[in-house]
Amino acid sequence: RVRVRGLSIYRPIIYGNTAVVLSPEERAALPSAQADHTHRWTVAVRSAASAPGSNTVGGADDISYFIKRVTFKLHETYPNPTRVVDKPPFEVTETGWGEFEIQIRINFVAEAGEKQYLLYHHLKLHPWTAVGSGEPEIPPPDVAAKSGPVHSWQYDEVVFNDPFQSFLNILMAH
Ligand code: SLL
Image 1 (cartoon, rainbow, N blue to C red):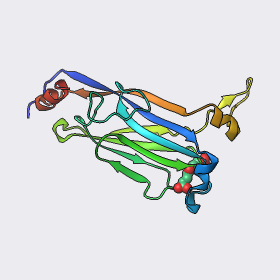
Image 2 (spheres, helix red, strand yellow; image 1 turned 135 degrees about the vertical axis):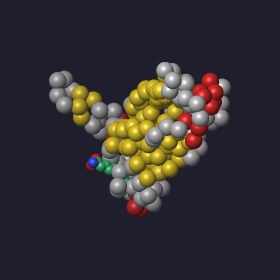
Image 3 (tube, rainbow, N blue to C red; image 1 turned 180 degrees about the vertical axis):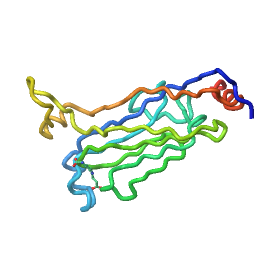
């Protein structure tokens, strides 16, 4: 296994979430254990080449050639909070009522010989709005529903230093 010393190569990703307010009909259809849920959200890791909210699989936006697995660690109020996703789209969709920190663990393909990469994302459900110079507040549900989906995305670059030649070949082929 030969490393290409002195070389750094990166791949751009985005991670984050979208969220929508559940309609009264959707809320009525929830199982009783989830009767207090107000939103549906999706947390995801995607290629930065794909638009937030899209979930293209297998095309130019596919990141599975270098990412083997993404593990999303949800709040402990969720059943089986550790969600392992082994193929794209690397995402989890859930319903809920509250915002919380999600730990996102990225494992790379074996050829990379790289350690895991940890990210943290604060799940955003509400279109927080500051009135005047006051603290941001959660708008009432009817106002929030009218303002449309909430998006919270971060851009990041995964950097590989001194990559293995075989892994570099994989990266360059995409
Ligand atoms: C808060 N510290 O109090 C946060 C915790 C927890 C969110 C938010 C539902 C889980 C379920 C859910 O949305 N948990 O019922 O499965 O705002």
